[in-house]
Structure formats: structure tokens, C-alpha cells
Length: 344
Image (cartoon, rainbow, N blue to C red; front, side, top):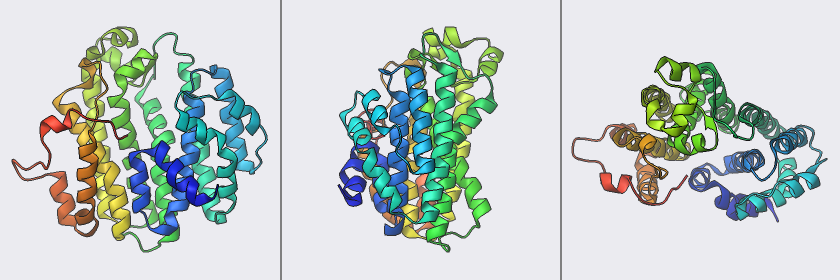
């Protein structure tokens, strides 16, 4: 299988809506960012395959990080034998990791170095996650806001950092801002998207013994992880504070898009920002803590985002309109917001 096939059907099958962003990128950026996503998705599969004991997953995460760092696939066969995910597409990705590594060898050394650096951070975050929560036999919470901030950086903020560095390496004039300022916005943008996912998935994570809301904040609100696991609505006050923090971070995502000169980059960055904003609005209308089903942004929202990406790519005014549309103009009905298939 050649890189175009790995970056096409396989990438589309495991990345869902993010694949659309990658396809909108300038051609020279699709390979490093697409391959980085595949490798991060593989590490996520290793970390999340509950059929394998935590100790086994931790061992294979360390092995996988070493493979990326050293370019030697020692331990790959055992990893592929032990990690059997419920999703057949994730299993296909694990089975084709040797081809992903072969693709990695074809990239420029700077791209290889950036991919290696971001994967070490992502895998560190996944490792901390497994060490903190274990098998999930009892509900465990992160202890402090600092731990949650660290986690969102390691699994998503660093991706915004990686994206920024790679884009500026390939397109030095793609932004009005320099590396330091654009990197800061990119880190916060990534952290905001991760917080949206954490808040949306909080009830299902609690059922697996994972509470990402800090225990110190839960206790200050008069509750603790165990009562919240039985009744997530007890965490509403803490949830609301982190909802506001996610919105604050996505404001930096908006600033990030405004700073870009490249229309293709703007369009690619707009899609996840728009879906994140729409999900935050859904959670403001109806908290996910009081419902059993997972809150979903419908496919119609993804199609609408794609339609908006063209004007936003060339117009700051269009992006500002999307952020705060005129009264009685939303582009989609509220009913559509609360139903449909999950594109994430």
C-alpha cells in the first residue's frame, strides 16, 4: 500500500470529520499532518483497547513511542497480536502500522522530527491517563485544575503547537503572526477542542470510572466523584465553569483562524472550530449531564460547515458572522442541532 492509499481510505475511515480538514490543507501539508493523525489514532487505540489489561497497554504505548523515536519496529508484532480493538477500522490501522512507519521514512527530516515530538507528548498524556484511572473499577477523578490543564495540553494542545510549527515550516508567510504568538493561540485552540470532548463525554467516562472534572472543585461545590458517578447533574456547577473555559479557548481558535493568510489553511482550521462551537452551544441549551444518550452534532452541521468554509477562507467578515450571526439567522434549526449522526 502506498502513502496515498494510507492517507486516503484508511485515514478517512478512522478520522471521520477531521479527514475533511486534512483534505482542505495545501498539498504539501497533507502528508505530515495526515500521517501524524494516523499514528496518534493508533496510540489512542492502544490506550483505549479495554480487552487488553492496563499493564499490557502501558507496555505497548512505551514500545510504540520508542518505535517512533528510534525508527525501529522492535515489538510491533507483539503489539499487533495483543491489541484487538472492537472497531475493525482501528484494527486495520494497527495491522498497517509497518506501512505507516515506511511512510514516515519518506518525509523530510524536519517533518519527521515534529511528528516524533508531538507523538511523545500525546503518548505521555495517554500513559498518565491509564496510570491515573487504571481499569476503572471505581470512579477516580483528576485532583486539580492543573492536572486537567496538563492533560488537555498533552493530548490536544500540543497538536495545535505541532500544526502551527509544520504550517510555518512549509508556508513561512501563511500568518500575520509570528511563531510564538500563533503557537500560543494554537495550543489554546487545541485545548478548547479537547475540553469540548471531555464535557460532552463526561457521563460515559463516569460510567467507565473516569472523572476529568477536578476533585478539588467538586468538593468545593459540595460533592465528590462517587456521588457524581451516580448522578452527573451534581457536577453541573463545575461543568459550567469548564464550559466557560472551553468557550474562552475557542475564542483563541477564532483569533488563530483570523491570523492566517492562506485560504486553504483557514478553511481547514475553521471546520473543527465550527463543530466545537456548535457542540458548546448544544451543551448550553441542554446539559449532557442529565441525559443518557451521547450528545451528537448531526451530519447536516458538517455539511453546513463545509459550505461556510469557502466564504470564511477569504473573508474575516464571514468568520465574524458565523461566530455571532444576526438575530433570527442561524443557518440551521435548533431541532437539527439536537439530533442526527455523530461526525466526530
